[in-house]
Length: 163
Length: 123
Image (cartoon, rainbow over all chains, first blue to last red; front, side, top):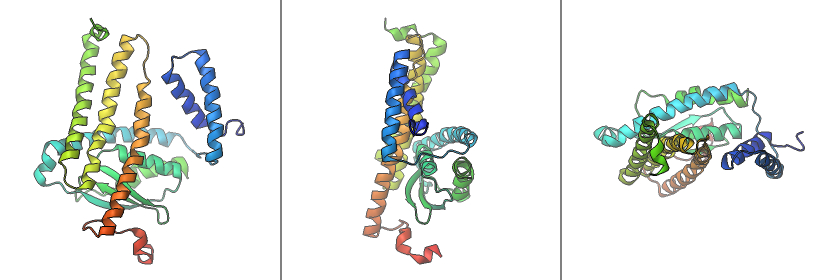
């Protein structure tokens, strides 16, 4: 199984994309499956480690939380643009966040979340110390960013990938 | 008569609303990119366009064309996935380049590199 389909998730995703981009038919399903299988096999030559996902439920919950957060922060940042940064009162800041997460797939998901959420930008991650440097657009004194990132996102990613 | 004229009002209204929301967010992001002062602030502005700016327009497209073509048209999802996956790469690349340059020039207000601080930071 793993010999013929070394990256099942990648291959499944590619079949899905293939079917989305073409009209659904049996022929396209077969063609897409063959191409996706081949792509997975080729990818295994470059990246032999496949992602280890231990639990899917935390990822589903994470997706819901992130979806809501993105809507909320879109609104907040759009408002800041319109009011010219609360009329000059807005302060941005760098925040250092020590992460426990080490799994590369988990980290790349966290990078996507942080980037997709307006108001936070992932600047630098030091793999040696595990410290992430984040830039926060609207720094409010009472906000505890390390607790927010670790509690809301990192904890669920740890559940899904490591624990 | 264009195919879009066949949209009933109950569908046309949300499609129009989504288009207006998406394009407004994208314009605000572009405005911020031009208007904000610091480089690090500017990184944040276009994320309006790459998150709900894109998502709202894609949703509008899915709704409208699923009606017009009388089948589920969802290949817009692929656009969304590609935007989601590729923007962090760009952000990190230009973010790290800016950090590197600011640190080299000794600009004020930029946190020093963890590695440069050496053992003190680790202990």
